[in-house]
Image (cartoon, rainbow, N blue to C red; front, side, top):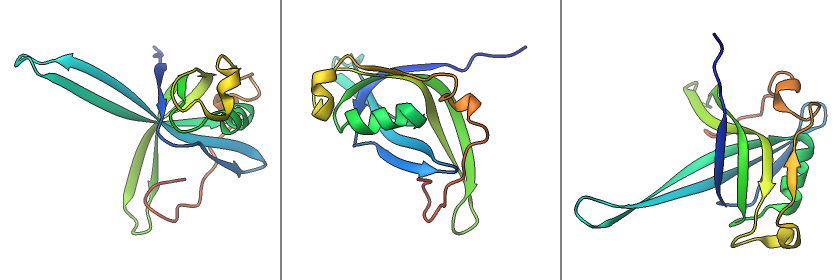
Length: 148
């Protein structure tokens, strides 16, 4: 039996996307998105929690993200969870879990930046641009503990 691996989040970018060209000319963009929730605890005190999500976007979507997204911009992201493993400089195994995006929709909100006039722009992956059809994930030169 196969399972379903689907993630949908709406949140705000914590920084501008980092974009690289890897492998045979593929473009990859990485950025972090914050999602927050608030509730009133049993003690009547307001509680807040913010989760940070690492997002990976490939090819044409990556180029669009680099062009239109900036710190603070609100986005809708749909994709799948993926955990990667690598060895750091000291030979220690490191892991990271990230969302490999298949759909990124640019929303309005604070920090709309360069894409403000295109707040409803949607970028969906075509089969050629999707991560699943890209082949094995390119390897990145890890010069520190965090791959990127």
